[in-house]
Image (cartoon, rainbow, N blue to C red):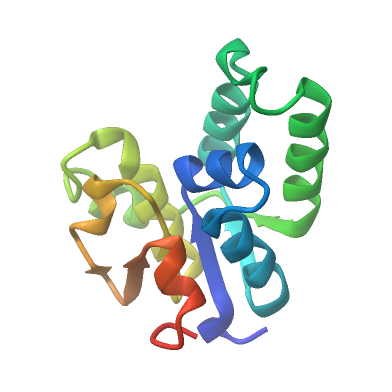
Length: 144
């Protein structure tokens, strides 16, 4: 795939995709699987695993359903450790320091789009050539 077809999803969007199978985040994720090469870093993957298996989500999706999604996500994504330059530039770029790992990954893989439901990221709109959009925006013709 070309550089134009690289994407990063943040944890909150992926959790919504798992817990609400008919949701816009799920539709965006499924659409992205067919249109983009999805990237993940060790840090973003660790965060997803830690959040996804919190007991509070048992009421919405079984641990098995979440495990199946997580396994598929790992299989469908490309693992990339951001270089030190990307990490350094991402530091302080976002109101929430915990979200900088997504910016570093997007920069390192030269993502066209970072899909987020986090206002701390969405407020940036664009960062070093990566559009930061909601799941709904990804589904619209404006990004595709």
